[in-house]
Length: 84
Image (cartoon, rainbow, N blue to C red):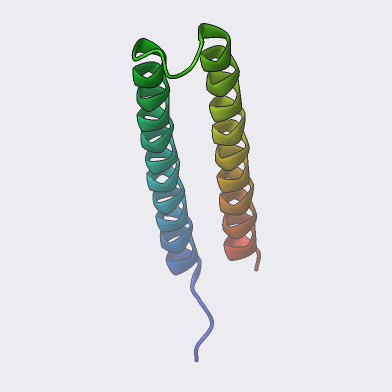
């Protein structure tokens, strides 16, 4: 297998960035759905307002952790691809 050219490496790095962005969008969509479900439960009196706030904080923390993990993996892979 021939070595990757600089141009091919840059193209692969762009693709990695695009896949990372798509993953972050998917995580944010899941967060939105989870927040909507929590609000529905609070509105239906299945959970209290305090439980809703706690749930929203937990959902946000999980989302932030997932986005950070995606960013870290993307940055590491880009760095790996661009090293000669």
